[in-house]
Length: 340
Ligand SMILES: *[C@@H]1O[C@H](CO)[C@@H](O)[C@H](O)[C@H]1NC(C)=O
Ligand SMILES: *[C@@H]1O[C@H](CO)[C@@H](O)[C@H](O)[C@H]1NC(C)=O
Ligand SMILES: *[C@@H]1O[C@H](CO)[C@@H](O)[C@H](O)[C@H]1NC(C)=O
Ligand SMILES: *[C@@H]1O[C@H](CO)[C@@H](O)[C@H](O)[C@H]1NC(C)=O
Image (tube, rainbow, N blue to C red; front, side):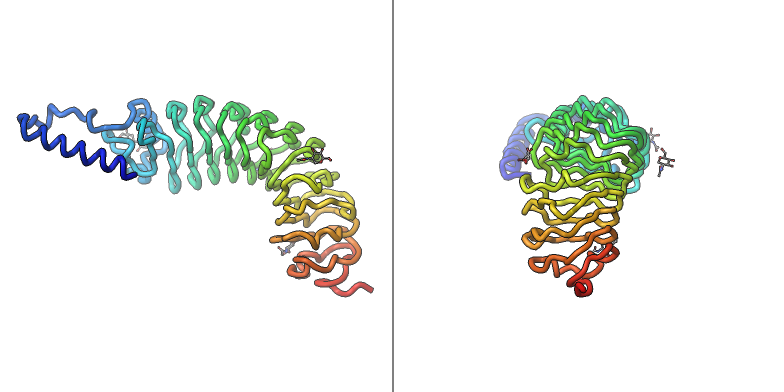
């Protein structure tokens, strides 16, 4: 609570005391609850539906009927409008997301993580035009990733990781006007990464697609994508991933491990922004480019490929032990054995 609203409350209290000293004290039954309740009735009704749909779990014990929802735990209201802007739930909560979630008209952040939610995401969620953060990771949500999620104009962070979503990735997700963080990792998604994923509306997107069943080649359009993070580890992708290696752009994290990528690493350009680089467990051949010594690397792993030649010496490269380089065709030099 800020000082301003504390002061407002204090003056309100003083006024109330003043009035009470002049007026006859009303009986408690005639006092209307509504005067002390800031919670909007539409928000209140939706929250009660959510509480019931989530089995009245103890995390919502403070959500007592006929009390002010703006005072409930894990709920935030806008101090000016008293509309619910955030709900954060986590823990031993079972149930399905009820369609009434779409009645929380002014909500900005829905965080339901590490729960046991099942079922699908209700389409009423598209009514939430102020939603910026939707985090539903570590649940058991299933069905396809709904393409209607692309109708959320302000969503910046869409997190659906560690669920049981299946089917293909809806191409329309790249139409999300504000999305920067898209987490679809640790699901059971199949098919190819959509061609449309080379064109997101915001620069510097972070795409987390690892630990799925994605197959095929990377979309050609990735060559034009300005990304911060691309994580596609542990899928069934194959072919040429060299289109992700470019000198320009803002690439910081590139995780390609445990796929079947096959291309020549020798002439790859590496953006000097690159910090986390794991291409292990693929079929990548050629040699490690000298430019790698210019990078400020926090993670490096090229193990289990078909690389050959001398490991470039210098920079951060020798901070990594042999496990970052082992199981290649004929890599040599520190930290592996000297070249013959
Ligand atoms: C939750 O509480 C409501 C209202 O008290 C009750 O009607 C409902 O049966 C409860 N549900 C569960 C699963 O406990
Ligand atoms: C993933 O989907 C495949 C086929 O669609 C199915 O056979 C498999 O059981 C699913 N795996 C999980 C962990 O749900
Ligand atoms: C990087 O360079 C390529 C080819 O020169 C170009 O197509 C792409 O638009 C550039 N990307 C950025 C983010 O500048
Ligand atoms: C690199 O990957 C290999 C194979 O998965 C693993 O054994 C090794 O520990 C990794 N190295 C680092 C530094 O993470």
